[in-house]
Amino acid sequence: MTVIIRPPPREDGDGSVQVRMDGSGRIGNAQVFAVYGKGGIGKSTTSSNLSVAFSKLGKRVLQIGCDPKHDSTFTLTKQLIPTVIDILEQVNFHAEELRPEDFVVEGYNGVLCVEAGGPPAGTGCGGYVVGQTVKLLKEHHLLDETDVVVFDVLGDVVCGGFAAPLQHAGRALIVAANDFDSIFAMNRIVQAIQAKAKNYDVRLGGVIANRSADVDQIEKFNARAGLKTLAHFPDLDVIRRSRLKKSTLFEMEPSPELEAVQNEYLRLAAKLWAGTEPQDAHALKDREIFDLLGFD
Image (cartoon, rainbow, N blue to C red; front, side, top):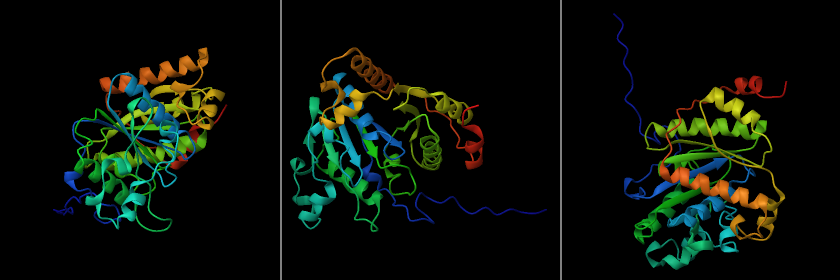
């Protein structure tokens, strides 16, 4: 009889360059959402307006931008706020010298805003940046009375560092347009969430269709991968103009089409707050996506 000896399971980070998460850094009682998607797909616009929608429902909201560009909270605060890494560098990384007002800015409708930033190009790890940000927030008790935390995360997930918010989140949301590139990126994100779900509580919450008149390609992928679309935001000029005006969609001049978008954000926030069933999705092979998508 052949005896198969299996190696012991490895903790997250073993055999890779991923950053281990200190258990003391876990976020407390807040509902935590991590927003992912292809670069340029509108994650920051989606995250910011979703944060406002949660605040309109009476929730205390904290949005954390996880991108060196540090513009996640731009429409909420009307400025590019300093990043946590920038602030830490100014005090030679002596975190005990910082006050909450040094790195937290209150934005529209009371949404608290933090920009984690990122390491210098070609150096460091995004996981360290996220970890330091959460540690600071915990030390200053800024999460004690927070109802909702929204992580807005850089582009596609290609490394353990920028997958770090998945270690804190309960639900991961994927923003995608009705095109091949963003769906291909969505498939990569599904893979990352599958990997993190083995060791952490994060589960797939669903897809947010953005900048798309139709969703046929997204739904074709969803049906094969086991995903569901939670909300659909069309490619409207008012959304583009809101970024130019440094405003959330809830501050723009009223119009019927804008009201429909605002109501969709409010509906999405209410749905997420009530709790969504985890979606048991599976990633497709690259060749499968090429064969699946496209118009007849």
